[in-house]
Figure 1 (tube, rainbow, N blue to C red):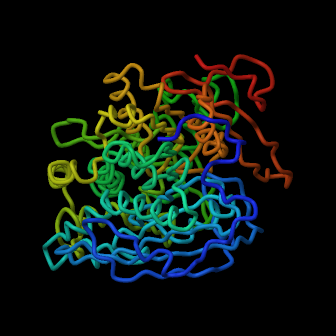
Figure 2 (cartoon, one colour):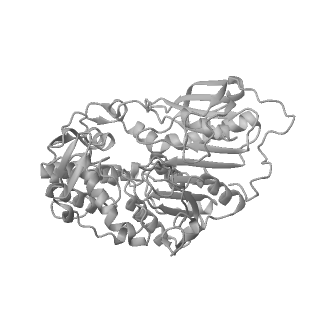
Figure 3 (cartoon, one colour):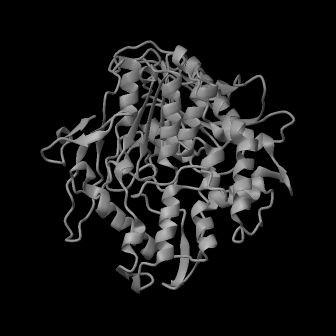
Length: 525
């Protein structure tokens, strides 16, 4: 781990003025290897890198072009019958002495496209496909044959390839520049957030700093729980349109919006929201796509109540958390409608794949007739089989703490895909295990923010630089500066950007008076 030093100083690994340009050739990286892999091929090419994808880590720099040494390492684990591609991108003349691993999303372990932005800002960067292409169907890689899981590739996706990417990336960096990175970082959201937690839990010395947002931890629980909205619709034999479901969410936000003293379309105190959706049954709603007018039905209200409460088994035993009242319910409770009265189920692909391909080993399984008992059985089977592989919720971070690592997590309270309260649950357990967790791991709830961004709430876009300052300057984030995303109002004008300082859990961002568009109107209590 690197010792603290001011981030504005020239780092030891930076390319010295007047130093010869490193050679981006295969011979430069010929010695790349790890004890447990066989390298199948390795290429190194100089190219102009253009930023084509923005991440939650770096300032937007879409108009930049950076000369980059792009290294592709293809390898396999003997006996595993896998093929992994790992990409290392190295700026040829503006390296800042730092290294960053970039995470994936959904079933995607990582992609080359994510490397352009960090490289444009001077970072050496790595990502890996974890043994399967980003566009591959789950069945094509997660099953080795009909009815049989491909455990090696699941292990690659879960953890193995992530550790190897860090080692290969840092070694390639040293071979190219002549010195190892002074500091190493991880950046990811969703699956990338789970990956960041996996690094801290299982490979605690690989990264000095980890940014792990909206983390897909508790994978074995929350992924099957994501099917709950579809199951509820099937049990009620009622598939509401997006218009009807969204209307209930709108009523809930209106009812609980001002609990924090500010009317801004954000529920900042979800624990105090006691809205009963049955209270709006019969309310008229004007819809478009499909067009028409409807009245909110009792079954739609019961559906919303069940999703907010979270999945339960036939004995009423709680299986997992539900969503906060402001989270859109149509991402997991999706339907396809030809009219307001003719809708069919549209499950979220990842959770459908998990229940059919992974848990049932049958990619063509018809989930539409799944019973409550069958769902509960699959839920518990998921925990039994995959907690140690993909659960990523080990609360013992002793080694990460001892190594001097720092981890920063934020999660949108309006998240419509990953249950916000699952992150609360994990952090609370870590806090109970180590009351000093605040010294090395901080979690910031983000009111009004959807999955990895979006929504009317405050988005912490500067969080990666905050992490760098924590690692390199010892400047721990007491609060996390965040901003709303400007949006067009109905009158065509652009709503003003609002600022706020997010509070570290368990503190709550509380309105104390003044202009609610300014950070000083809120305090942490």
